[in-house]
Image (cartoon, rainbow, N blue to C red; front, side, top):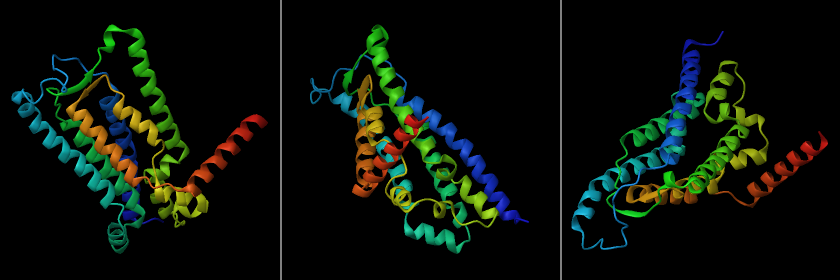
Length: 253
């Protein structure tokens, strides 16, 4: 008979699982919905002579930077050995992934809900509503990128990724889920947990309105991904082997 505490942790992981999908949906809309065109001038013209544009953008840029830094800090600190050891001492090792997922979702939700536009300074703006080819190019690019990201996430076992499997296994006194995965896959997971660096980068930079706040978000998150996603040659070889196995499996069907 599982303890009451373990059941509560499992229920919390299920709620977190659903909440994460809700936040990811909001993030998808936030990053990929075509943005409205304003009368803002492109920043490379007369920017230094237009003090009001700089003053208008200052507040949003400062706050948005704090939001992104807060997310990056959470995303890195909660993966640290200090936090993992603390949770083990508190007998919450099975809830580690759930706590990480929940705090990540809360930070992202807060960022999306409170993001401040800084459209007084714009690098480029394209009115996709007036051109069907441009609109479809924009939509298809984002759709393909999100499909790769979502598809890769499901391949990487989302129930384990978001922490539900860990709490379920703990109730049944099984070893942690990673113990049942190959050494190569565990090595990959230790370096990166999200698929498609290129997909995320395209989503961040392929926008019809590249305002100062969007540029800030794109640069900070791309830099963070580049630093944090430390895949090596072993990871690449493993993924190539798995891809080859998938191709052979499809041919055999």
